[in-house]
Length: 302
Image (tube, rainbow, N blue to C red; front, top):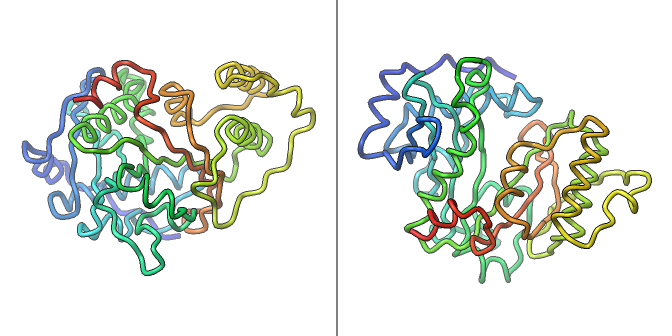
């Protein structure tokens, strides 16, 4: 593990976050959202890599490199874009997401998509044929750690919402109908909590369209039959949250965001990411037609 690079000069960031890369303002929190790549904003990309490594390493993950940047970030011909959440008041990048529109996806010699998730999951022929051209892959989401340490930054509660709002704006003019996202669990995350989440999604949303190369095995929780015994997704989710409160567990914020969006998923299991500090990655597919939050539905229909 090597030291993380120094922060990129604010003047360089502001020069690249301009009218050409601007996407939209957030509805809440006063953020600005930009879409960049390695060609349009190389300095912003370096800062994104620095902040990602800082955020992930601080939670027990990360690459161990000076910046968290890989070929999907650095080679613009692969089609990946960076969604950047900029806080103009603090003049910092408050968060980000990496996006690949499936109709721009390239493929390896074995027919698998050239995207980060392919290291963890094998995509079926059916998925590649019927879903991939209509699916946006979301990866490497982060909220800047230092941003949340500032008690005066009231707008931080809107950061994750602002990122997803930006995703909706970015996807609206495309023909995408789904997004494939991963929820990251760090090695310190309680195993019982991870099992309950996995069992919940497998029960209500299990799919073999995409499968982990090496499925992560979790030990069953004693008395599981009584924990999640409801027929409905929302009823079982309420039971799950109640059990988590009893045990002092927490749900990853991004998982809360996904579940607030929809009660219909395709769940593809979980895999260990040996290139990223052995974090556990859970794969989920969301159909835009199933999104229940009206504000996001309106944005996606634009």
